[in-house]
Length: 272
Image (tube, rainbow, N blue to C red; front, side, top):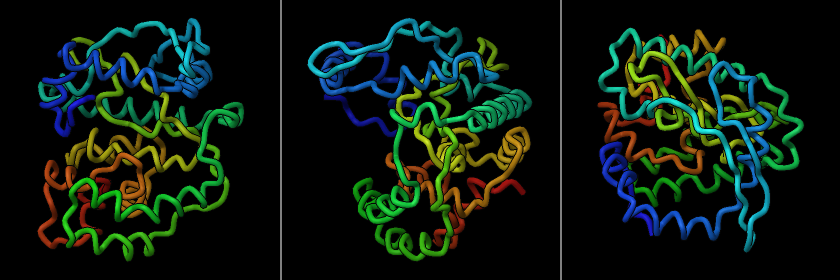
């Protein structure tokens, strides 16, 4: 029902068009469950350094659907203002994002164990690893990159023991609101895809969607977060993420000249 959207420009064209969005939204509403959004928002309310929507009511609706009625946050989507934000303010914003993620990941996720997956983290990693090549093939990744994925994933040790952090899982510019001048964060939204797992999994979107290959920003974000993760680990999780699109990231951020899979790890996630 909804047209494919692969770039920010396509998003800006499609999303404001109610004639396009309304039929798709109504169709999705008949299938959506909204199980996680309400409980996660209630759990994080008032506990993060950035505002989140306040839940007024949530519950079952009809035909298996659920609803969440929340407050409306002030601000403009970061994706819409980023290109006009001066470098100093970009650095300030990524510091605020890093701080927010650090606090989010420090919250006790145990009360959400009955509504959030994925269960055993090692089993989740295995499932995603088994489908990684076909998932990226379906998004148009070329054969020369696809054939490198199994060996690369095998070379990167990922945790298999119980992981109890609370990743948002879609840390990207479109999930953050900023003030009109683009100087301060005014909101973090969309917690429906949150899960309980390895906190490093939350950095999958940081390289492609937040720092966007700017070599000055990853270190600032990691410093405010409190730690830095190995770039290879973050690229591995990028390949495993349900909505990952490596072909798109290579187009938008630039493919490494050597054509080897480890190279994007340092280019997108390195903090040197």
